[in-house]
Image 1 (cartoon, rainbow over the protein chains, first blue to last red):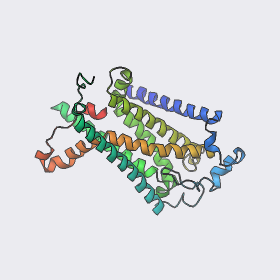
Image 2: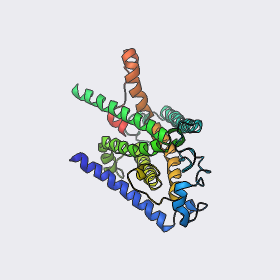
Image 3: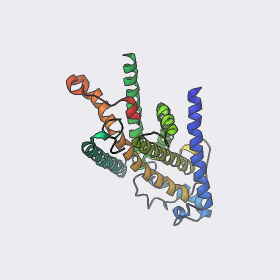
Image 4: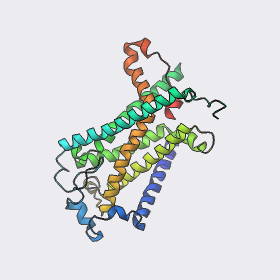
Length: 122
Length: 173
């Protein structure tokens, strides 16, 4: 019962995010994102067959060319490169933060434990 | 003794689940690698894995929510905000992904209009999530290293692995 309640809480939180996203989308606050895309009247067609969105899908998490050549192909070299790129970005962030954290802990020893900072700093 | 074993078991479950989620995340951010069908179904399953992850860390979420504006450590606050942003990013990714779905939803007989806006938002949230995941992994790096030491190093070189590890509560925070 407890798990069901907690799961429902998480789903309600997700629904709030979805609601906010839809509200933003309909209010035009996200119109800058849709500028440059196909006009509203042709949006249904866009999802089912053009490569319009594929040309700019060079970002890390970009979906494939929807309706294009890549969707059924699978295991392409570009896909493997994309995974490597994302892994590299994550690795770089981890390295930078781990180094910074190590440095901070060495310079400020009181940050090591879970204890309070010394009175002078508190 | 039993409590320590339970804690270790829980840590193992966390490590396994989180490792699986990480691999699934990497795979689902490369639809050209997996193909659209696997990308969509994997992302839907990913949503379920995220819910499981949140359920496993429920006590931490409740604890930090209660003392967020009170006595919480700054690191717990940073973690909390980061996790909240990750939750929003993943929800947006899955929602917009369903809106522009070409395989999963049509398979169950649902055809949504989709649109350029949802595609752009999907990409934007996916890009943001890569950075957020990087930060999330970075903030838990010490725990990951400690767990891997315990699993890989300890059985082979017990002395080397017998260094103090952070507590369960600390790894959650």
